[in-house]
Length: 303
Image 1 (cartoon, rainbow, N blue to C red):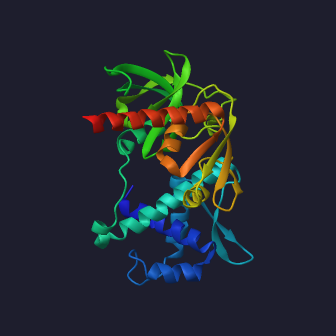
Image 2 (image 1 turned 90 degrees about the vertical axis):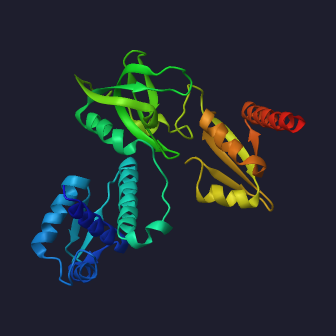
Image 3 (image 1 turned 180 degrees about the horizontal axis):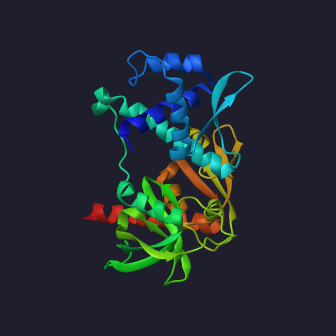
């Protein structure tokens, strides 16, 4: 599809979403000021075709309110659907803003997301068809590359700038997680699969922070944060279960989560600005990791 057409789709969706609801007259005025117009309004037939294309290509419906004579974005009623649609709208809005700011390219710094362009479309296509994929994988825990891995791709997730595919490993007979930046030779096989009826992707990491999980029962986790760090946790919660107990000089944040590798790494990244209060085993693990880090610095200082 023409790049310019996609850019028009993004502009229309972003404009309507930012206004909440918008009349044809207002949309026309904004269209005449956009890069896609020579000062002319958006033809009614073109707008109709764009609405159809946006629905077919992006899965976003533009509805018309007959009582107010305004157009608006129809949002998915489910929580997971709303999150996906909001992510798409946010991404499209940012993409449209960046693409229309070529004159400021040296002043807009973007984060690099490895392998998303190369492998993500292939995996999503396999998911759409419910077909197994086959690939090679270079794990950080193994010296040699694994070849011929076959999985049934259940869903994909992005975390810390990296895309992951989660699926059922045919050889190991269990669900495993793979980072796209460590994959190569990804192909779609000719073997179909059926998604388990009781499997809900949204629930797979529901009790976890990040992309790692385990079979442990979720426990109450409490951390004490100094005022400045509390503001960051307030603005970007570690987990949906986050609850805050506000005190004069600190805050206590409580969660219901599993003790995972990603969680421990995140807590350690905050250094002395937070303190793990419970559970005891998590607190002990954090203390042990901090001791090891301090020992490493002491050894280097002695040398």
